Every structure is written in structure tokens, then in C-alpha cells.
Image 1 (cartoon, rainbow, N blue to C red):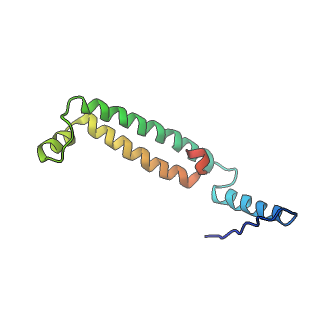
Image 2 (cartoon, helix red, strand yellow):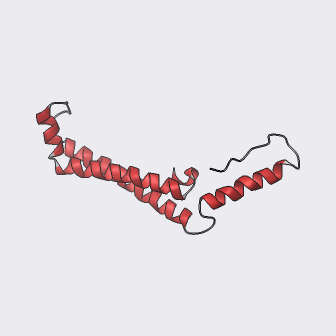
Image 3 (tube, rainbow, N blue to C red):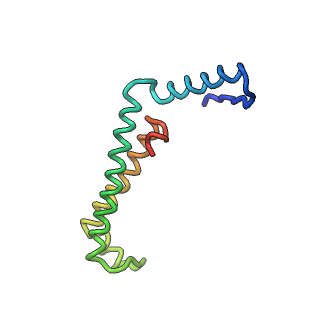
Length: 110
């Protein structure tokens, strides 16, 4: 990766360094092209997926006993369609977050 040094001194030499950081950030995130917008779309889809996944998992646990690491109880969870759907949406949302972070700044994704 590219290393950018920051000068904490206030003065005219600081401005070119700030511009250099800004320019490298624009190149990293695709400039003003579609990548930041696509990253924002992925971030919104990710948030929806993660939160809907939690709702589905909650719906699934209403029919299930408390989770214990016993094979019969784990099998009940893994065979519950609501719970598995929620788990897959949650994991999918996490993967979309990673993709969004590759396309847009963290300040936009979070």
C-alpha cells in the first residue's frame, strides 16, 4: 500500500500533504464514479439483511427450546426454517458489509 506521512505542523507545507491524502482516498474509492454509490447501496442492503435476519431468528426461537450444546437441541435449531433463514441473512449481510467497505469509506458504510 501507499504510505502517506502527516505533518502535524501548521503552515503552508501542511496543505499539499492534506491534498495528497485526499487524492489517494479518491483513487482508493473509485473517485467520483459509481463505486461509492454502489458501496452505499451495499451498505443499505447489508443493514436490511442483518436486521431482517435477526427478526427471522427471533421468530424461529419462539418454537425452540433454549439453545444448549446438546446434539438434539442443535439439530432442532438447524432444522428450523425460520432460524436457518435468519442465520443466512445475517451472514449474507455481514459479507455485504465487507463488500461495501471495499467500495465506500467507512464513514458512509457505518
